[in-house]
Amino acid sequence: MNGKVRTRIAPSPTGFAHMGNARTALFNYLFAKKEGGEFILRIEDTDKERSKKEYEQDILDNFRWLGLKWDEGIEKGGPYEPYRQSERTELYKKYLTKLLEEGRAYWCFCTAEELEAQRAHQISLGEAPRYKGICRNLSRQEQEKRLAAGERGVIRFILEPKGIAFQDLIRGEIKFDTTLLGDAVIAKDLETPLYNFTVVVDDFEMQITHVIRGEEHIANTPRQILIQQALALPGVQYAHLPLLLGEDRTKLSKRHGDNSIRKFREQGYLPEAVVNFLALLGWNPGDEREIFSMEQLIKEFSLERIQKGGAIFNLQRLDWINGLYIRQMPLEELTEICKPYLPEHPMDLEKKKKIVALYQERLKKLSEIAELADFFFKDALEYPRELLYWKEATTEQTKEMLGKIHELIGGVGESDWTKENLEKILMPEAEKLQNRGYMLWPLRVALSGKKASPGPFEIAEILGKEQTLQRIKQAITISKV
Ligand code: GLU
Image 1 (cartoon, helix red, strand yellow):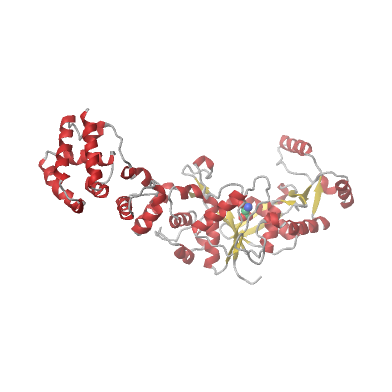
Image 2 (cartoon, helix red, strand yellow):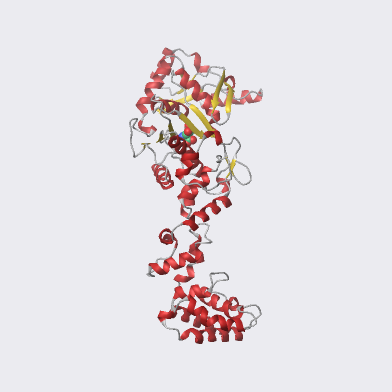
């Protein structure tokens, strides 16, 4: 080993990449970069039925979107190619054969029924159900003979009953008693190895130094260490990240809603905000700061500052962070990324920028602009007549007011059609009323069709003279009845 830190993210492409994958990938990336090391992306597709290319693509796309740049791995290549487990069968076969030849693993021919009976018996005795090692006593010749006769078996690894301990970089010493574990199935056959085995082989072959992964993998660790030892491979350092919890403090799962990265991306969360948010799920800088760029995170990150207890996935916090990043964004750029959420419309870019500017301060995610600003893009608005009435104003008064507004601004020239000018003309009239709502409210509703919107002058400027007057006329017709 050359002493360089090498971490990896090793997702199984059995579903769309979710926020848990992203957090684990991010922490591996940050640690590797902080230490001047390398970050590797390996695809663990040993589960042939559940692994799909579509999911693999989703993982790659979304990790890239988040700015997680792997130094080696799928699509990028590297010295330990291939980085997809389904393409590494020959290598695993070599290690499996070694274990079989050395008597550290054996073929097991127990049927599903036999295993079930054994399990039921153990449970009835109040014992922890585990494989008793019945086939362990078959000689090599016997095993070969049964295989040659076409019997199907699986490969089990002999788990020595012993105490095992490892130093977790986050949790300190973790101890296990393997007497409670049965011999583990490590392959369905020589061509079909399983996770606990392939992970050990690959972490060694790819020279991984640190395995940083979710807490749910702690239970797999003793098996993996025993397999390492049986193959006389050097150990790796482990760091198990705290569980992600929902707001109800139970393990984050589908029950809490769609947690896929693409879902958050679709809703208009910015990658910088998601990274910032994920970094704080279990890690903290040791002070009150909450806003970090990727570069800052790389500088500040350390495994010592990762907590043991679960980290709550707090959507309000994500919204707050995202809103902050939206507010900091140059308008030009924000308009560009808001475009997919706005209707296709021949409106010029300057106008679109003005619309986006109206909402920049309040957006928590980009998708919100679709509903907030839809009225700018419609030919005709639909809203209940009563919405036009300010407080107890009558139909007649409202109609009159709208007529008056139309008269007051109908003469303003196209080139003078600015919010400042419109305000200068209408506000003095509005101030004369018992409440300016009698004028501003019906005007705002006439232009937006909404209960809540930005102010009427800003809207009128963006709509332009023709459309503004047309909407006021439409409101007069609606309020007539
Ligand atoms: N393929 C495993 C998973 O997606 C990786 C676990 C590990 O990091 O060892 O959970």
